[in-house]
Length: 262
Length: 353
Image 1 (cartoon, rainbow over the protein chains, first blue to last red):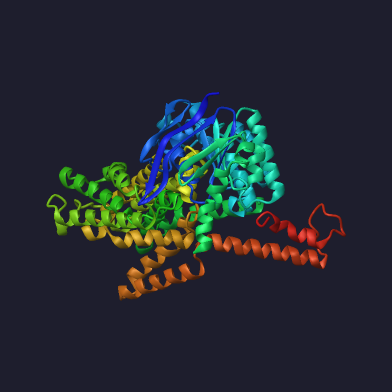
Image 2 (tube, chains in turn blue, yellow):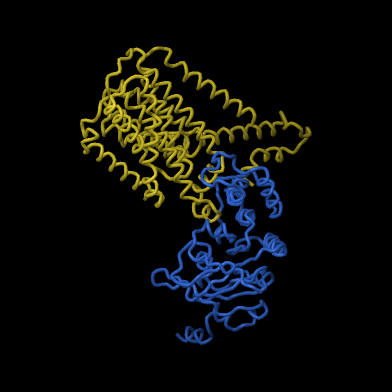
């Protein structure tokens, strides 16, 4: 299997804090990869480094063996990496449909010539775009909210909207930051079903999640991040039984002894 | 919904008709104030195309206005222009202001929120200082146009109608941008700029384009001002009060809405114009304005139109509820004995799922 997305020795510090140090991960094309680790282990920072929401201190990011290190977010998106955010970020004063159309602009544009001077007053979202948007909203189950302002959506519905508008650009790989966080169990089931279906159609996923049931049930391969470095990577069964994972989450046994002694 | 659209269209027609016939009354004062009103309508709409749509509050619109004033002033001074040709200079004034907007925007649009506001104010003062210190701008004595020997009774009329055309054209442009792909990108930037960028929106390009469009319109209005007021003085061409007034107008009417700035300007500028002529002490007039601003911020933080619209919707909904509860006028199509609870939830269900 070839790696669709690869980070090679990525490091990032915020002041004196090493959020990522020498972090190398690989996501195989067509797979669903999981990224787990305790809070502050650098998962979201790694997402930010990949998607252009920050500059790496050293190391490189590759998409399909092409270097995409430190490209701006709009370029990264155009190259086929979509992402969602841990705390959902939708355009609250736009309608659900308008949210979809914003994300579709890149796709619409790539089919036309002209760039800057192309008719700037063209009505937002052609019929084809709206239809595609509607299909995706049906797919994620929020089609009936298409005309509502995004600020009226519940947290779970916003998560679905984020997933929907990332999908409209047909990205090769989607990075999901805690898709199940704060979402009710039924909706978690829906989300994981949708991810599986998209994966069958060829979309690759990299998922950060704390819900172990969700990650272990969904992912082909799971990487554990601790203190900004991958400590172990493997199939869910392997990860579940690896002592280093427990160490990462709970601290080592020795440390426990020390703390109880103190 | 259709009723609302009809009301809106009707209101627009009445407004335009009134605007078109006002100068025919041949009242010099009214026409003079009218030019100022239209000038501020245009400027507030232009301000809204950038600041209202993107959420970047600019207090530097006077940079464009003053640039327009001085562009036309310098042309008139060096070419000694008088007569109908002066109206042909407006687009040129807009163009120069638009050119100024490019470096201005490239610097200021790198920062956001309060920092952006401060940068626009700083740039504004740089321009005011330049205008009052360079010899080629006439420094503090300014520039005065050649005498226009037009009939004083109708002197303001051509300015009135050109200002009306610019104001209408700006409003139509704002409307066209609002629903366009470009407008949607601007509004996405207002809600979450970084997220918009992550969805492929070229945010800097979009912001700068809106900034330049806004500058072009404001520059044209500055060009109009020069012959209309027959002066280009640094403190009036680059007037901090201008910046504050148009921002206030937009906030008063409804920040980030299409008709809000127009409404705000129509409401506020007649008062300012009246106060200029009638209130002997200018500080009283400004004090009233300040008090009004406080009232708006405290009671109607989102502006008159959005708040009034909400109140109206709520009123209508509660009236429907009451009617349904009394059993009078069930919603069309509903069976006579329809559960009141269901029909009451109808109007509000969409806004609060």
